[in-house]
Image (cartoon, helix red, strand yellow):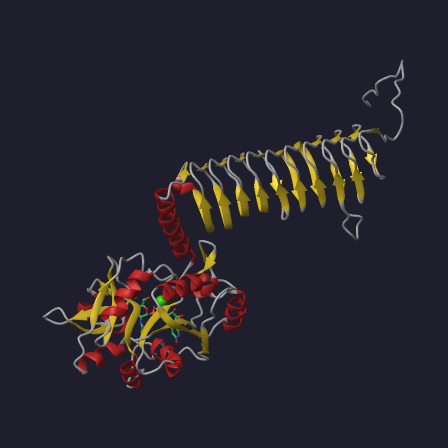
Length: 456
Ligand code: UD1
Ligand code: CA
């Protein structure tokens, strides 16, 4: 039986107090909704139908950016309840399929739990339930004397005895499509909220003689996100689970509670990451890479033995083996360092290649440049790559030496082995192996010069 997931995501998410639809808020660097789609796919759901309402246009726009197969979407113009929401998608589900109802705002449910839920619904219906100490606001799972589920009663419609039940409905459920279609056609909205409750299908199934199965979830796995506090809690839980996995795989984290990965990390042996680092997108770290405290790495690839010292920010950059980067270095998009390159404090590299063994140890800006091997870029060197309108390239040959505080006004070629004297403003190509010097004027000293005195 093919499984079709119906993901409810039409609600407003008022308590987020956000212009962004709730299901697009991120956990671990990706929208909650993407977590749900991934879980559904991992649970072998053959098709996903997304029920959209509030913020539908924004969600559709995000779906365009999603790699891989896109879920089918259906618009629920008025949010008349969870049963009504499911009904919007049901015509697209064949009768012989199994329906898995998921919530776009219950992002951390595991594929394993979804598989259990689907398997439990083979004979009719299964609901995912959990125990909570404070069940206020949730639908309560009502069981008969034999412990079989007889109904789910919403908080507002429950009797005081039912309100005391601590087993709650997570909202996720699975059912045979043919029967779910029939049950939902009988659901009415004569209840406290005036909504069509999906949960009413449970009592209807029981009336049909179906043994509705309850599948128990860990409470945190099935928790819905309604506000920013719950979002932050879910983020912590997600990060905690992720760091546990990474450490099992051999990553050395100085403190798993002070590490955030918002993407995918691959790493070699004996990789160490100090406290306070944030990694985003795809990050690849070779053997023995060492990342110092408070670094940000986004879309970065580092070769074996490379060391990034404290407070460095690397974005869409690559470095080879045994490089030294930082402290306080900034690699911007397109920075490509070969092996054994040293990039020191307050050095910014943008869209440039830096050859093997080259060094820029302090206070430099290198943009739109191709720097050869064994080049020394002194403190305060700047490639003047922008004329206010266009960007221009700087090419620096192997073994060149760029003296401190020099400006290289691009477009420009500095030849192999060229030596640029400190404090030069270079506007024409500098030849190979020669000393090039261009300073404003000769240095003079004035004997008998008097220091200015402080005005009274
Ligand atoms: C629902 C369940 C309740 C359960 C709780 C768990 C029903 C009637 N009640 O209650 O038993 O304990 O979830 O959190 O199902 N949605 C739509 N369209 C609608 C209405 C809702 O897409 O017309 C979506 C919402 O965006 C949300 C989900 O369905 O993702 C749940 O809706 P919500 O209104 O939050 O249901 P609860 O009252 O919390
Ligand atoms: Ca809710």
